[in-house]
Image 1: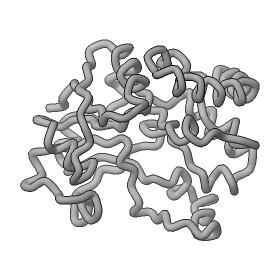
Image 2: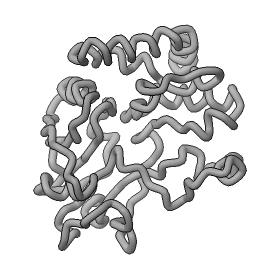
Image 3: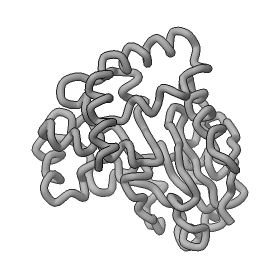
Image 4: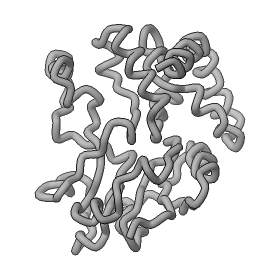
Length: 232
């Protein structure tokens, strides 16, 4: 059974995630503190059934048809995406090695994942090594449209724009790194940042100003990508 209460790992950006969940009919959230043992331990300590767990700041905007079925998820220990956006792309997967990145095909992203607690006999003492020998269902990219700094520095503007268009079709937007560190150059085309704007109302003033500064710096590019997405 898929738990319709989403676990939100609390941080300074959590109100963005809570706002986005409140906008999805039929879903609720439970804001939880990070367990010192790690993110997987946090999820297992709070989930009674197969559940979605996200880090605060991630924007969710999915319908039921976007999700894997509970029956499908029940066959796996965990469902999550690879951290590198282009690691499965035959044309671009070599950028990580060329850039000297330590990211590999087995580097997974724990900002967004489904977990089935019934398949875990024990809670791992840390995230390091916790996925070893686990049955993993790979999450499709539309379920984690995330920031990729290696791609920003190496991929062409046209390719980044195509990625930005996909952001308008994605149901999970994982842009906290952009809120914190900004974005420049062609990477301004890579993320559907305007979809974040409706969920900023409860941020502390200093964080709100920080995000609004980023959104303003990317407004021209965001409008272009939004228009491009609406025609495709």
